[in-house]
Image (cartoon, rainbow, N blue to C red; front, side, top):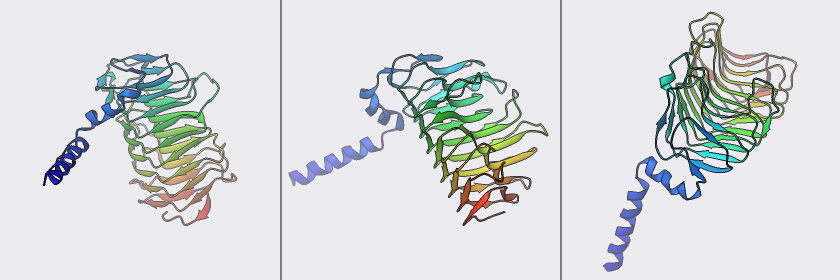
Amino acid sequence: MFISKRLAALVLLSCALWFTPTGARGAESFDNCTGYIDSLPATITTQGTWCMRKDLATSINMGNAVTIATNNVIIDCNDYKIGGLGGGLGTSAAGIVSVQNSNITIRHCNVRGFKVGISLGYDPGGAALTAGDVIEDNRLDGNTLVGILVQSDGATVRRNAVVDTGGSTFATEAIGISATSGVDIVDNLIDGVSPTDASEASTYGIFAMDSQGTAISGNRIRNVIANSTAFGIGLASDTAGVAVLDNVIYLPDGTGTGIVCFDPQNSDVVVRNLMTGPGTGLSNCRDGGGNIGG
C-alpha cells in the first residue's frame, strides 16, 4: 500500500508540473541563459542565450525593440511578449532585428504591433547576407507591414504563427513572411494579411526572392486579402529550383492567386498544393503534379 501511495503522489506531482502555466514552464530553461532581456529597447552585444522572464512593451515608433549586435546569439522569449502596439499604425519600429550577424536563433517569442516583427540579415543599405539563422516557434501578431523578414543563406523559418499582418499607414502592401537567399520556409501558419486602403497595394502570405534550391513546404496560408492583387505564395523572377510543395492555401478574394511565379521559364517546381477559394490556383508556375484548385 505504501508503494502505491508513493507512486500516486509522484504521478500527481508530475501532472501538476506539466500543467503549470507556460511562463513558469519556461523557467526550466533559465539555467542556460547568458543574460536576460528585462527592459526595452535592448541591445545584445554578448554571444550566448538571452532570455525573457516577463512580458515587455514599448511605445517607440522608430528603431528596434531588441537589437542583436553580435554573432551566435539565441533569443528565447519563453513565450513572453515583446509589444509595440503603442507605436501605432504609423510606426516604423521593428521588434527583433539583426543586420550583419550570423547564426542567430529566435524562438518562443510573441512579437506584436511593429512595422516588422522579426528581421534577420536584411539591410536596406545592401550589406552582405548572413548565414545559418533560425526563426522557430514564434507568434507574430498584428505587425503592420511584414511579420518575418529574413535575408540569410542556409536559414530556416519554421513552425511560426503569423497572424493579422498589415494596416500600416507607412506603407500600403503587407507580407506575412518575406525571404531572400537560401531560406527554407516550413510548417508555418499565416492567417490574415491585409493591405491599407490603396488600389495599388499587393499582399503576400509568403514572398521569396533570390532563392535557389530551397523549400516552401507544409505551410497553411489563409485570408490573404486583396485591394489590387493577393498571392498566397509569390516567387520572384530571380528564384531557381525552389520546391513549393504540400502547402494549403485559402484566399477569400476572387482576384487572388494561390501561387504565382513571376518568371514562367524558371526551374521552380510546384507539387501537391491544395488551393481553395474563388481565385486562381497557379499562375506562370511549373506544375509538378498533384496540385488541386484554381
